[in-house]
Amino acid sequence: MYKSGTELLKKYFKVSTIYKYGFNWSPMYRRTTAKIVDVSEDLLYIKIRLKLNWKNRNYAGTMFGGSMLAATDPIYMIQLLQILGDQYIVWDKAVDAKYKKPGKGTIYGEFIFTKEEIDSIKKTVHEKNQMDLTKTMSLVDAEKNIIATFNKTLYIADKDFYKKKLKSRKQ
Image (cartoon, rainbow, N blue to C red; front, side, top):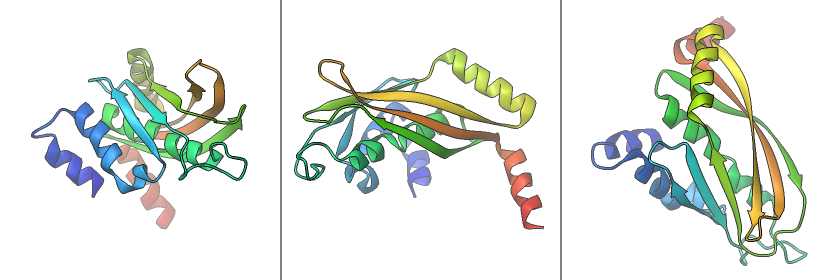
C-alpha cells in the first residue's frame, strides 16, 4: 500500500515531501510518537523529533526505550530504498540499542548518508550482489547529550539476485 501510494504521489510531489508527510501521516509511524521534521531533497538527510508525552512515558516518568527504538526503526531502510531505486532490495536485519541517559524531554535524531556511501553501496552490490551495511545514529537532547545510540544493520541486494536466491531456497 505504501509503495504504490508513493508511486502515485510522485506524479504530483517531490519524493522528499512524500517521505516527510507520508511518514508523519502513516498510522504505523504516528504510533511511535515521533515526527519527521526535516528531509533533504536528495533524501540523504532526515531529522526526527520525539517529544516526551503521556503516550511514551514509562513507569519512571521518562521516555520508554521502545518508543525511541520504534521511532528510529524504519527510517534508514526506507530512506535507502528511495535513494537506491527499484533495482535494489533493502531489509532491516538487526539493531543494537544502547540507552545512555533517560529521555526527559524532546529528543532528536539524524539519519545521514553521503553520496560517497551511496556510490560505495552500489559498487559493492554490483560486484558481490549483496551486502550488509551497519549505520550508527544517536538520539540527542537539545544540548546534544546522547540519550540512545542505535547500530542498525541493513541487508542490501541486487533485486534480480535476491529473487533468484529466494527461488533457489524454495526448491
